[in-house]
Image (cartoon, rainbow, N blue to C red; front, side):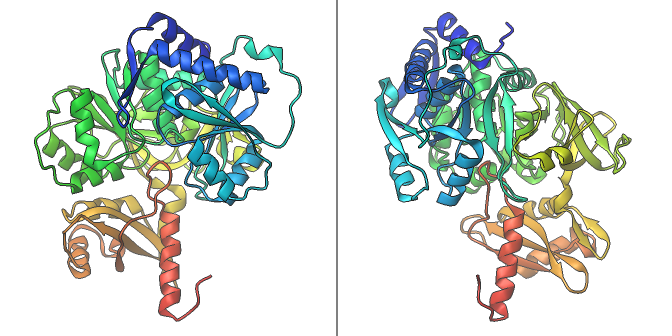
Length: 519
């Protein structure tokens, strides 16, 4: 069936799949059918409209994963509003920037979130309204200082494909976060792409452990199962100690994670045997998956790992490896699903297979632009194509391989080095849980390669052994000049390692060694 809006999809499931179970909350053992979920959504939606929400109004959601989030998101979009997801871990200045830049009219949060907002001393007048509904517990609808006009009767009109539903801010690795505007059409197109790419059915049960304030968790493991009439298990956060318990107990058929989660799972001993026979596949996206991690996971657990490529500007998934028995290629992010993709040179000309260039995309799931950011739009959108900033190539079979980010390429005395190539070698060491190579300033070469490593629990290996291993695998100019052992690596909301922050860590280390004071 063709849907014209997320609202129409929810209404259809609520009425036509009413008695079928849809969502499970492991912590409190709560479960909702499609019908019960729809009732919760309508309940909160009515409260928002009675409070004065008008079509197109921005509503920030400041919550961690759980039924509250799943209900709140759908309530806003069915009311004609636009959701602005906010990571509850952000600092006050970061939250304030998002609220101001988005011109949010409401915040939906819970008691803990309200306490947190008050403690952050935001420069906003907050007027809280308690509302309780069903199994999801207590929420607060917070009205920002501006008073509203009379309720707009057009809010209950049919919503259209082109209507905005999501204003999703990127992590801002190159400056202030950019607001990605996504529509009903974008999200529905993406849900269909995921549905087709992973052959989802109403018999599938997804485990959602990625944050719903990020597009991977929200679209791939909430909206896509809704589209497929499947089921979702939604714990409040990822917990390695409970992960396989959830898979076994709920008979999970697939899950979507990031490479760092796969690394964490592999680093933790399993003290008992679990029945994983229900699992069809494990999905990895949001950042490059080291081949060594893929192979170790498949060999240890007997579950095929499907690497996909997704970005916020495309509502998440752009390409994916096919499911068995079709060919999966380790190191590749797979084939396009529902998108047009090209690899081009600096002049915009198409490149032949096996030649590295910039990846550009277009499709119904791709945003039309950033909010309030003319420069970013001019830089990223040209002739109907979105320029991703990712570098890669197609092989002769049409599989896409990513080699890195254009802005992260290391230039050592004119030699261009992909950090991912160094990462792959480091991850092939069994002692390594996480690794990231970065380019740092060097007075002689311009830039030099260094690497940060987090070891697996109780594992030991020294810098000399790592550098010797790298020397046997990499050309001399690619071998890191220094290895830094750390307790953890900085990661963004999606779990992607933030290399730019590691460069800052390196610079701070150099200052300390010179006896300079850190600012």
